[in-house]
Image 1 (cartoon, one colour):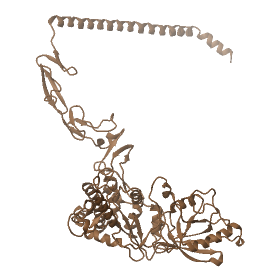
Image 2 (image 1 turned 60 degrees about the vertical axis):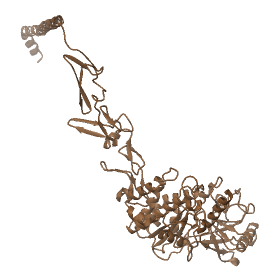
Image 3 (image 1 turned 180 degrees about the vertical axis):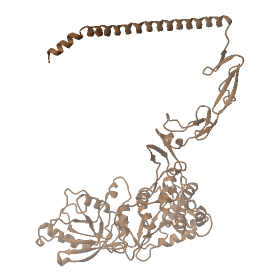
Image 4 (image 1 turned 45 degrees about the vertical axis):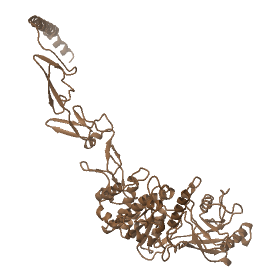
Length: 629
């Protein structure tokens, strides 16, 4: 039985792969030989599916063929330079290692572009990059264009380059011009492009690559579509399960609508985790999100939905669910009912119009070949080749405009959006303070809890943000409970606590809602035998029977009476204190009066003799005055 199950699984997997008749198209650029003159001419080159092709541009350089390490599978010992100081276009042989590794070694050796000569006589093919694995981290670092040329042309270039290296041919360099201007059709002022993708985020590096592209390119895409410069359409690859296998566990777990639309199991394990049919349903939902958004005149919301779904509903966090998806749809202001109506019934034994159209579009037409790998970008009905990266793709899209009609985004990196003005971008917002987690960037809006007046917020940015740290209580009371009655105000936000909400003493709750705690009923206070408890809002009052005094800290009543002897002693003590105080006051006044009198007399005694002496000597003083005249 295990052998039979294996055969069935293999058969289903094979049929998932070859569901459509293959028709492959190789995207080409032109190589024009400028010198030497006797080998001038135009030749085709197949653009590599890695690096950065210069769509819409040209590159003129000198062909160099290395004397050693001609396959380029190991790092070169020196940097390549041309005598004329033109850019170096390195020519290498096919074989022995990955195409992408050859390009990486060429780039590190100073090459501006790479040509790989085929070793057999065959039709040109598209050089692809290997699946990411340990030792292939260099793939994302390749920034030069690469192309494959046929064997005959490659041999011709090698012979001429070898003569130049040996000093023959009068030292004339082999100069070629790589031309990508016609690699991307540019018929009018609007570009139509499509991305074949997948909602599965557990398919390894390919899934990571396409999500990183969505994150980086979203701002450009939305700006282009808002301005009417481009028309974008998302697509999702689906396969079918042959009727003979539709009752097998493999088909049931990977397909919907009775085997008509299928996707591979994310974990390649039919007994655990998510199933392939879960992926198909979410693919269908994302297609319908785009249709509904397009009908409402906001087709660019697809980019927000895909990005938000990745963040909020990932498989890795076990949130890849219908409920989570519908929450994202609602947050973006889309009509959930229309989306569900568009999706139809995945369990029905009938065709789904949306997915059937996807299977038809998957088959190539015109200049475009079949779509068989993910992710695949198609611009003006031509498959894009090269790194799926923001700036590289933007350049390719801009090359699809008729010359002179390129929008500003193609001419300047400065991009501003206003997505936060519409439903706050689907992000969290505090209605009381108007604090929002929506922030515009040139890549599109992001939902991140903000920092306001030095107060930091923390949360997921979509449904929740809470103020944390010093000063948080000044921002809408830190999101905590607060209530005022009369002259009393209680709050669950404490400046001494940097996070969280805690009901104050006299209340109970979770901090976001607090209710008065009845200390009397709960026997939390005023529990002594002679106590009488009365509950108040946020507090309580406790009275003691008879003439007793209540001590709150100890929760006890103590006697509040004194004997006649005690009162007599108290009165005597008070009288003594009063007498001593009076005597001290009288003594103080007497001493002060005596001191003042003595001081006055002393001052007067200093001035009285001076006046008498002046009177007695007055004649003498007049005589002396006359003698001086």
